[in-house]
Image 1 (cartoon, protein in one colour):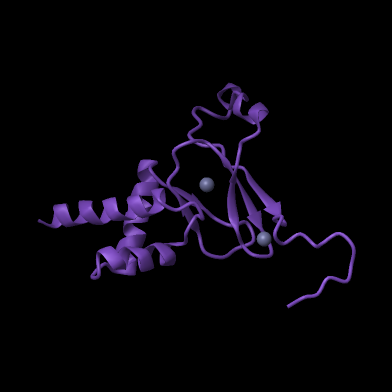
Image 2 (image 1 turned 120 degrees about the horizontal axis):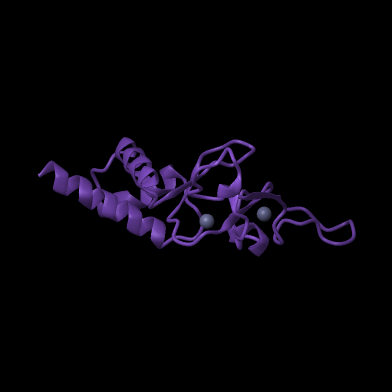
Length: 137
Ligand SMILES: [Zn+2]
Ligand SMILES: [Zn+2]
């Protein structure tokens, strides 16, 4: 009985992640999961996210400047762009040159499971307008 419930919770969390493209935090996943599973706790969400991450079904992204981890249902390899101003976290393609690097040829590396490239800057919505003097709300 317990096993069935855990599996259902995990399925709901994974579905929520697969259906979102904004890399939600655990708290955001928790808020959405409660609509489907009103009794789910934040601790259960964290436990399931950790389990899914360890299984390789979910990717945890830790913003380099701190803040809450964000989660991604990792299916295809990609890099992340993080906006410092609005904290948007966007998927960007991995540079093809990076995809072709054979890291395993390094003496110190035996196997690579993920290339985690994190690009930080200003998104197009937050970039300062060309020319000064635009109004700030
Ligand atoms: Zn931004
Ligand atoms: Zn992503």
